[in-house]
Figure 1: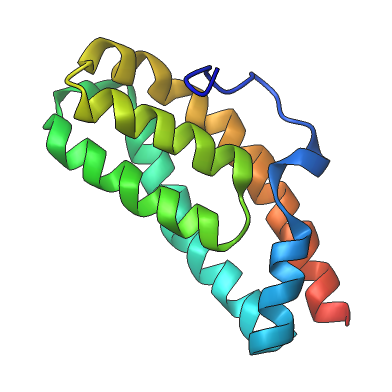
Figure 2: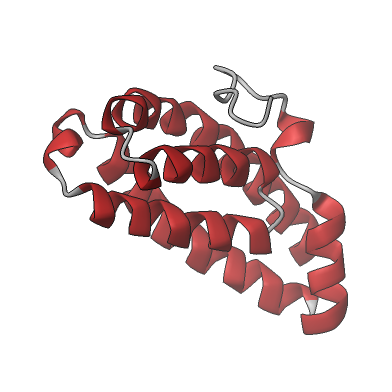
Length: 130
């Protein structure tokens, strides 16, 4: 089902769609995409850290939903499929007023982000080498 939570660990090759990154590199240039990945990682890392902070449950649900939505859109741009799917799932919980389900799912973003970040760094290295 579409509302299944993210697995604890995602295979590195499943974290991102490298084809999407190559298409971006074809359109924008490899170095430009590598810099955009830097910007995305610089934005996403602190956002994921804030969302997975144990005290995060005190934030207004609408603010959390807005953060999730923004990150999901950015994740989609860089082909971060698994992360985008999980962010969107949590966003749906928030929009439905399911705060318990939303808060229960937030900690799972940390390992998913780590896997995505590692795969993005590897793809970035390939782009810079090309």
